[in-house]
Length: 103
Image 1 (tube, rainbow, N blue to C red):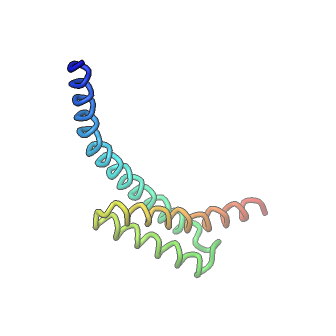
Image 2: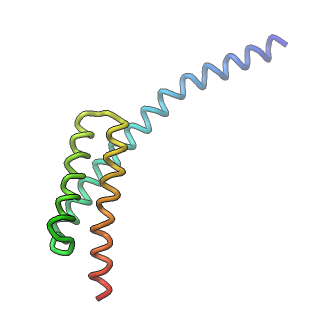
């Protein structure tokens, strides 16, 4: 019976060891995603800015700036929120490009 209990303790310790690694991996993945999005959305905005107008461009630029700031600060929650905002803002650009291509 004690062998089973020791196994449970060992399993619990393994879970404790994995959790920080999982959190660190999630943080690294978020930073990589943010970095890639900043590059790709910025590049696409430069190429297709005229298709979305000034208000849409400002919204995307604000989201890009917020994502850069969150990336520099390293706060995971702020970074994930900024990524979500940038994703939403970039949909304006994708929609404008889609409409332009279908004309």
